[in-house]
Image 1: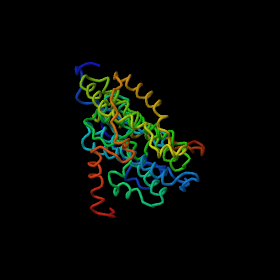
Image 2 (image 1 turned 90 degrees about the vertical axis):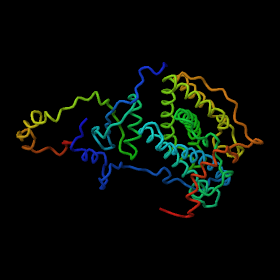
Image 3 (image 1 turned 90 degrees about the horizontal axis):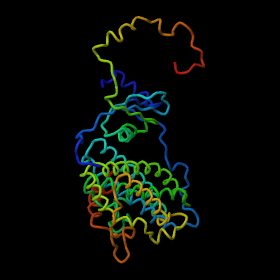
Image 4 (image 1 turned 30 degrees about the vertical axis):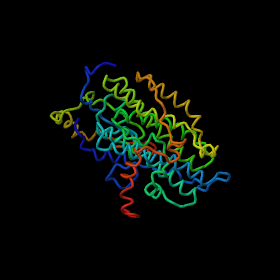
Amino acid sequence: MNGTAGVRSDWPLFEVFLRSKRGLNHVHVGSLHAADPQMALHHARDLYTRRNEGVSIWVVPATEITASSPDEKDPFFAPSGDKVYRHPTFYEIPDDVPHM
Amino acid sequence: MSEDDDEYGAYQALAGDDDDHRWAFGTGFTDPLQGVDTTVPPGVDGPSLATYCLMLGDDALIYSHRLQQWATRAPELEEETALANVALDLLGQARMLLARAGRADGSGRDEDELAFLRGEAEFRNVRLVERPDADFAELAGRLLVFSTWRLALLGALAASRDPVLAAIAAKSVKELTYHRDYAAQWVVRLGDGTDVSHARITAGLAAVWPLVDELFTPHPIELGLAGTAADVRALRGEFDTVLDAVLAAATLDRPQAVPLAGLGGRTGRDGLHTENLGYVLAEMQSVARAHPGATW
């Protein structure tokens, strides 16, 4: 314990990811403010799972996420737009292969 | 962080089978009392069981109201939702317990009638739950005391001879475990925080401590329902162990306080209350009393 030195007036931002009961992956659902990761988990539980949406939560400090920039949209994503042969549409998927 | 264009699709993925995709409703809701036999078990005195359910139900009802009063007043939006969630959990427990009371005493009164149309002396809650919170630290301290005690109490009731009480307890234990964890984290944060927060949580715990002994003093109704009701005297060990662990992590000392006296041996469980309860009831009951039987 110490005085008030180094105390921040605002809490950092965390991004929240939820996995639903039948979901296979965690999905980004929003963000929240919290003082530390444990508090962020509590807040995520209280804000984003009130209607029985989730069975697993990830929280990530927003500053830890490196995102692509809208300015880079074309060089990043346009080149894959004409390469339809990358989709496995030219052969039959066996019935017992799930989640394709 | 920029939002994905496919956010709507993300919510659909969370929503499950429901055809209504306007909201991210969850799925798999359950009724905790489904299939539970609601007749009063043989050998259990109905009126005593009803009074006992009122005690536990009133604790939850009145404390829920005090927590609801934090809505729009909490220091952070996230905490406000957290407190509203706790209040709603307790309100749900209160509804089931009051409904059980109305059935067990044979009067057929529903939970609304018992919540809104009883007078102050008919409420059986412990006096701890009536207090207004002086600040957020006192809220955290009181919530820790209340949820630690109630978790131990309802944990014991999961083995009650009354199947309805046992089912309500089994459901409530999960809720209370979270409430206790939430409160404990805040007490540790405040106690081991700054000089200001340390002083505030110290004062908050000191303010509620005179009301702690009453929680572990059994009422004759409880003693007469052995096997159906929990013996609160047996819960003190668990309570002390949990509080000592949290207080140690929070660098706080256990408060020393003279227990708040009753009147002629009567306390909250007998319908003897502090002046605070009247204000809660006035706010909680006024609409229901002004418009009897109204629905919306």
